[in-house]
Length: 253
Image (cartoon, rainbow, N blue to C red):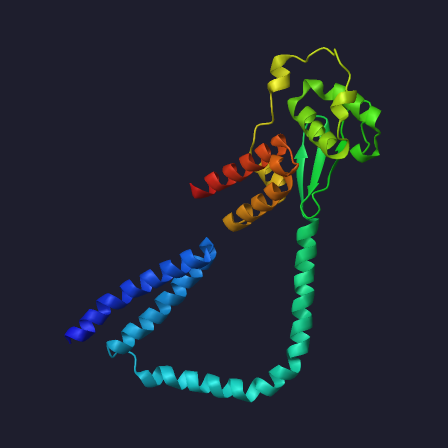
């Protein structure tokens, strides 16, 4: 009786430490931790019921034996279908990778609508207003881009987005930029887009309802592409971080 009581106390403690150890060792996500906890709790409950005599061992062994016999009977058929399942898994994996490569983030400013392709890191966009409205940034020559830059001086977001594009596609453009141009109004130059949930989802290329794990995964992927230390942009990295922080903070409330 005493041994059984001790086991009833010790087993849950051991189970808790085991789950914690596995979670830390393999850096499991919140969803994986939930699955691990539920599985461990179910197994622990079965063991405790058996120990208390509430669940006869035969009730547990009978289904296991039937399942084992069924698996042995179906094994030859499963082996014949193995190439099919491998082909199907390969196609699903390829489709998933392709979708991930084509995922894009969108950032819209007064003058520009930019698209960031996650897989390739490609950065391009449509011009929304001004002399070159309706054209793609990639269709403009160096001099045209510099004229567009002059038009964007009054809008901080448009100017910084365009400068990030110029740094990637036309290194050394600043040496050719016009000097002595009038500075824009300080209030207009320093004003930036206020982050909100819709904008945050667009920047990360996710849909409303995305999980915490998806937000963290996409943020990490984008920062690998657009971090300033890797040839990215301070502006884009700041927006990507702000989008992640807003979504994770709102989710935790």
